[in-house]
Image (cartoon, rainbow, N blue to C red):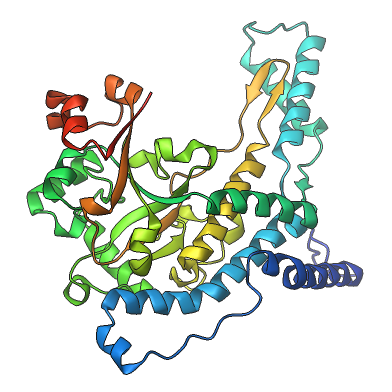
Length: 402
């Protein structure tokens, strides 16, 4: 008798599929009745048709903002749905429990062999212990959140974030910006400055990921994909910022700290009519948190686009997601273990259309210890002149954080 080969993976059972359908249905009902109303997402407001006068006064920037506002309502609802599905139905890997158990088993096996902490160990014995640990440790499980508890946590963070929203640009130099009187997008730099910027990985905060000569072409393609007007249409390329808030002292280091130690802060109300957002870095897929991993299935970043109001909700989801995953940190037998580190690209990106001038700056936050140690600073003029020169010349801008 000939037997057909069998897959080791059992087919999905009918009752399992039924349970999944019920869970999805219950979550959808919870989203519609509980989650969306909390964030004012009951129904999309109809956009009034502009008058002839308004049409005549419409700027390219305003057209882009209006276009993205129309997409934003559905985009943020999809993000909330994905967020709750990930944390309540799928569940995040419970690394804390897994690695705590793994370490305890390893310590027990070492103790049985009389191996003390700090003792040297033969590699064959270490391999033997490792195999035994893998054989004894339980499979990693998923940790799921209660949907009502998750909503409470998310709404609490949202209330704090929306009370103090700001836009920030992190920079390694302030002199070029202050002397030019504006932020210079990468595309508008002189070719020499572009080459210098590529070598250093970023001369000013608006240079995002400008590490090779193909950057400007990639950025142009992304802006076309997002529907942002080109330089010839809008008068200037957008300036890239990140959405920040006073929550967790974020304004001290900026929302994208990897681009420099100086933090330029802008009140979003000043640029509200010409700023749009994406959840995560628009150029880098690593800017998406795990619940949002499917947003680029179509190969574009259009489902990441948000209005200012909806960007605050996305910011809250990013913040809570990082908090929940950072709970995998553990201390076992006096040993601190950290299993989660967010991608540096995971911020809410802001694209300020039509440029940004020094007049739009609310403050420049400088952490004194960073300046003293020269951490992340590439500004020869500043080092020569000293902080007092800039504090006297721009008394309303320079904010020294001790």
